[in-house]
Length: 233
Image 1 (cartoon, rainbow, N blue to C red):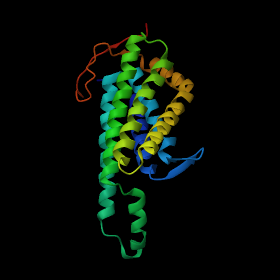
Image 2 (cartoon, one colour):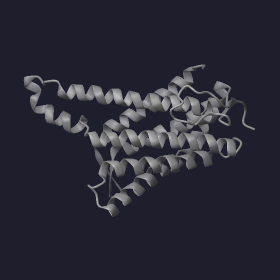
Image 3 (cartoon, rainbow, N blue to C red):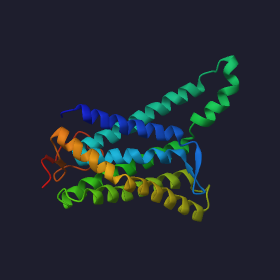
Image 4 (tube, rainbow, N blue to C red):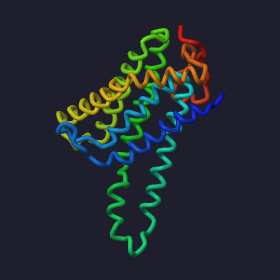
């Protein structure tokens, strides 16, 4: 498996946006009067770069990066937790509650976040890969938007359901799911022209355009290979 500088760059940005989103998600912001986590400004970027990974390098590479992002995020959570339980210096003790409030995670929210990430990211990449084969490499916008609608929809559904079942009334929870889904999907649709530019530049720079017509899409088959590198038909 050839690892190029551009692949490293895309992977780094993907993982960075994922971890950043999870850290800033604790802050709630107001968007048109709707309270949303601040992560909404950066989390959709991880889906955009997930689309780029699948479109240019294929599902097998994207699957590897999705798992890499998962374990990097888990490592960050563990390190933050260790920092939380270590005894604070005497002069810093008053700041301990602030640390716990901003960087601390409840087990339920962690479970919701990790589950939603895996389900949404793999669904996004699978749809992207299959639609590329079905469309014979044409109509990139249908793949980026279609995969986002599925991936972001499942992400929002899983996260809100796991995190807030029994906490929010059913109608409010449904409204929150739909609001998250539509806003994040609209975000990616709006930057579709930029996605086109990045994808075209990368395909020229890397000299490849992978089609996943023979790829095993099982998320657990991390080391499987498949697909063919060729120019778009």
